[in-house]
Image (cartoon, rainbow, N blue to C red; front, side):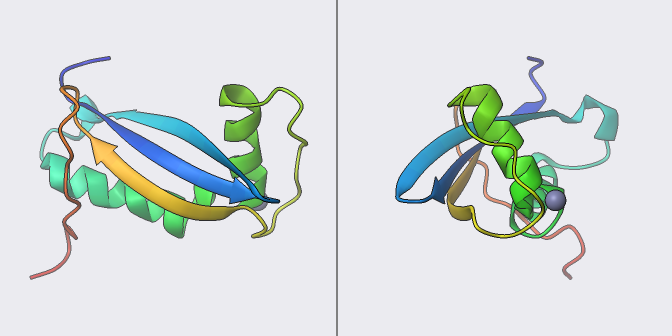
Length: 101
Ligand SMILES: [Zn+2]
């Protein structure tokens, strides 16, 4: 993991159980963006974009938490309980909307 990598620690809930997964973004390829802007993109990805969908959330859970977790169709049965972004040193990065004034 490079010094510019950020990790999203994501807590998901499904049928009474919680699952904590990690999503690492190495933003060395986005040099113009501040870590806080990249963090905003990570939150967007999990709250509203591809990883807001059960199909992708189930894949993260199966890979990182529970081999037996089922493949799931698209939907919104797995809920997002918490998301925290940390830098490579474990410090919390507060997301900032890159497009706000
Ligand atoms: Zn889907």
